[in-house]
Structure formats: C-alpha cells, structure tokens
Image (cartoon, rainbow, N blue to C red):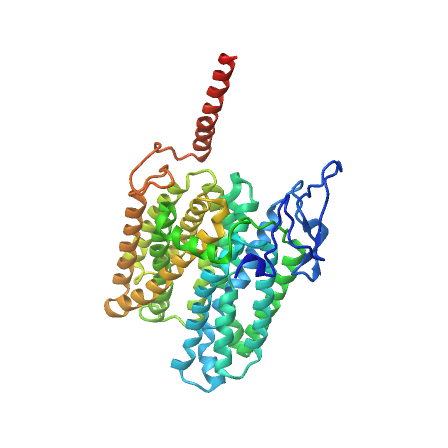
Length: 491
C-alpha cells in the first residue's frame, strides 16, 4: 500500500500538485508572474463532503490551537478509547445473553485488545503519512458504524469479530496526540499533550464505571447505544472543529513507514529509554488497579462491586490534574519531570506498601498520588519522544503506546499471580521493584545527551527548559556571527 493508493493520503506540494481531482482547488501565484502553483487547497473530506472553509489548510494562516480545540481533542480521546473497556464489567450479562460459559465470553476483552494492538502497529503510523483530519474522520466513522453491530447482534462469534475491528480502529487518540504536538506552540506543547493524555486516561476509568452503572439498571445493549451516541458526537465535533493539516512525509510509502518504525525501535536511545520506563510504569498502574479489586473485596474491607467501582472516581481526581502537570513540565527539561514523578510514585507506593491492607485512608491517598504522578511521568516521556523528530511523531508515539500496552499485560498477569500467591503487601512490593528499575533506566542516560548517545551525561545538568533552549540558540548563532565577521575582514 502506498500513499497514492490511499483515499485519505493525497499530498500537498508547493510546486508539484497531486493528480487532478474534483476535491482540490489549485491556486496560482497572486502576482501572476509565474506559472508555479502554490500549495493546493483541499476542499472536500474523503472526496465527498465539503470541508468548512475556515478549517481548510492555508499556509499563510496556519491553524490556531487554542483551549477549545485542545479540550475537543481530550473529549474525542475519552470516548474513543472507552470502546476498549465497555465490555469488561458486562461479561456476566454477555454470557447470559449469548448462552455461553464465562470462559467463552472472556475472549471478548482479549480480542478487542488484540485489535487495538493491531491498530497501533498498522494504522496509527499513518499519521506520519496522510492528512490527519481525513484519517481521524474515517476512523471515528468506522468505529461508530461498527458499534451499531455490537449493540444489535445476537451471535457471539459476530460480536467477537466486530470487537476485534472496533479495537483496531479505536486508535484515534494516537493520531490526535502527535497532531496536538504539531499544532501547539513549543512553549505549551507538554500542556497540550497532557490534555489529550488526560482524556485517554479518563476514557479508561469512565468506561468501566459507566458500563457498570448502566448495566446495573438496564440491558447491556444500552451501554453500546450510549457508546454509539457519544461517538456520533465525536464525529460531528471532529467535522466542525478539526483543522486540516498537510501530510508530512511526501517521499515515503506505507511500507517505508513500517520499516522506519522497526529501525527507530533499535536505534533511538531517547525512544528506547522512554519505552523501557513506559513498560514498567504501565505494569505498576495495571497491577495496582487490578489487584485493588481483590484487596477491597476481601477482609478487612469487604466492599461491594459498586463501591469498588467508585474508586475509579477517586482516580479521576488525579487524572483531572493533568493540565496543571503539563504546565509544570513545559517549564522543565522532560528528564527532570520524569525523575521527580518517579520519586513521588515511590513515596505514594510506600504508603500502599505500608498500610494499603490495613487502612482505607492509605488506599485513597495512594490512588490519588499514583494516578497524578503516573500522569506526569507519561506526559514527560511523551514530550521527550516528540522532541526527537517532528516528521516521525506518529511512528514514535505508536512505539511508545505499544510499550504501554505490553506493560499492561505484564502488570495484570504477573501482579495478579503475586497477589493471589503472596498477598497484597507482596503485590505492592513488586511495584516498588519496578519503580526502582525506572530510576535506574533514567539515571544511566542524563538529561542533555545528544540524540545518539546511549549512556552517560553530556551538556551539564540544567533543569530549566528556557535556559537550555536559550543556550542552544546562542550556540547555533555563534557560527553565523563568526562567519559574518570573517567575511567582513576579507572585504
């Protein structure tokens, strides 16, 4: 598959326009003194629907990334990633509806997560290849349409097949994250990314709570009717708010994109460091939340399923602090933000280790702190990854998110086994070990190493991002000034 074969991947180019099409308006130079064509303007979405004029890309007036658009990105992330988690509280109802065993119905969450992993690898990297507005509209349209099948089918195998497909096309947040980094000004990039990541984490927490509450009083199908409605709202909102933006890599094909992902996975030290940290932090997050259900359901707490589910609302308080976290990270070199986050995670995990199975207050404090600083860690890592190459942000983000997915699987499987075999304190100690590993991975490569330096420290230890950027600008300007002086002396 090449970009030419993709319906959403027509290329903008200042001198070599794409194949003539009814959805492209070519504009000539205003002075009329040259036959050279300016950037073509796309006027239709997916070749069918007119793009609102104020959202069409104009290089003379690039799109403004304000608070409203940033919040819209977060909302879209919440209710597209939620598709992956609606099914989890519904498994008992689904087994009754399809008249199958719990073992058979347990394939559904596995298939939807497998679909998501497939989408991460094969679909989200398209953000580096095609126009993101078109890709996002197509993905949301597909996930919305497929949800109709989930809400209406009475066949388990059809439900499983559709679940896999829904998982594959629910990668909209992984297209929005790099787009937010592209659109946001450098000084508030971390803030913009944090809002989208907050939306993603909200989706993970909200989906389980909403699905559980709705299914408590209504049929499980109502959950998917709700999902259908909010995704339709995301689709309409994307159409009226999302600005068009040109594709970034005019010289690559789809298979080049996939090959470079493999290359980045073994040649980029910053990316590899971030992925190793993400695997461990995601494992800690999954271990904590999965085993929390067991901890609260047994002595001394013996809470009901509904009360346990409400702890997700406590976690949302920490997630809601994401924009504040992003504002802090915008002022720091990302490495320092990551190190500070891990230090705080160790402190709050210590609270859980010491008293999580004894005092409910300790559990609440741990939930708030672990969610807040896990969010800070993820934003700082994403900011660092996006700084490597603007042209490859979608591919690098896909690899980073894939590492989070691997960590979730590891944390769920290993954490559950440790908790069941050795109890809650051993499960908490496991997380302490993983946080210790994160500290080691961060410390072996300092904050200012050059792009291809694997280990060690270079460029000092300054933590203020503005000072570091000012120093870089001064270093870049010095050769220019020296060259100008030499030219003046020669003349």
